[in-house]
Length: 55
Image 1 (cartoon, rainbow, N blue to C red):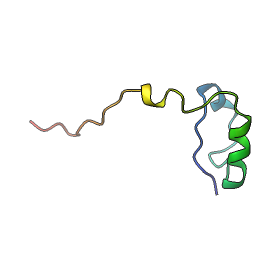
Image 2: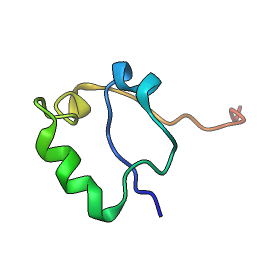
Image 3: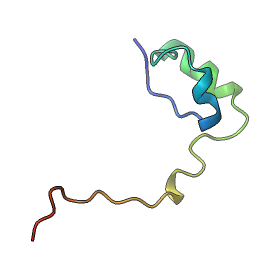
Image 4: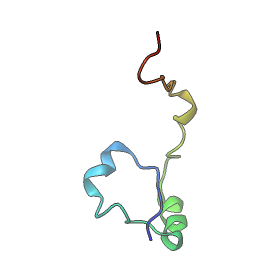
């Protein structure tokens, strides 16, 4: 069963499937990634807006 994994946009084309990483392989993958994939996470300002908008 696959697990969610943070990846860079540049890696998207290289993915083999949505289940490419598992609980067993995720740690190894993250140990080989040179940059923290979550580094910019808290800088991204987003808001969830109510839909449909209420008047």
